[in-house]
Image (tube, rainbow, N blue to C red; front, top):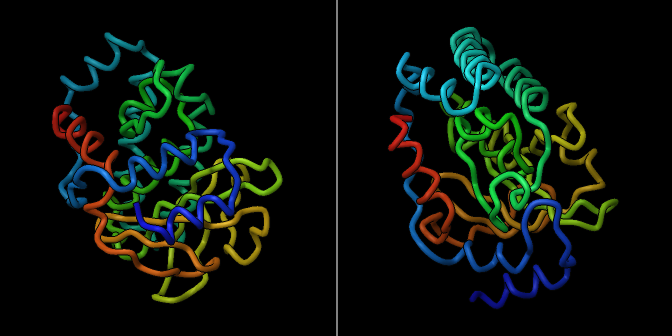
Length: 233
């Protein structure tokens, strides 16, 4: 394990609302990530029917609403895309821990799985927003899924951050405080790690941080992308 990373985590506490810091370190340096592809999501009638059969009408309605969001937001300015996507998932998903929702200590749900359940933890909110914005044409290079310490809660947390320009102060898309705000105004969050489809960073501040290498060090992405392919997503 990278010594710098060990020290960074040790300095930031050990409690969690969504996943333990120890598990973060274990899965950050394990298997292989599949780089995000801009291929279109497949909202087939067969898929919608399967969701409804397994999870009920409310679940299929949430997935159809997701489809409607993507169709209606395609041509909006990026700022409006961020707002629409952030609001959508904050409203559609109820916060539930993985052990209660999935019977697992740590599980990264696909957007389809989260919407089918109508629930998820902080990771699921961030992942769903990330993939939806990718689908809407927001470049992967502008976004990072970011592990932070929620200082007021003294717990680990995950948010999505958006950089309008390289090196700029990112905007924070969060489920704890639903209004999008610049990271400079989120003094309640202390960044630790961030990643996207192409890189992994150790945070130095509320800006870009120090790149540790490619995101091929990440673990959970592989399983998540595999499940998306199985569902033709």
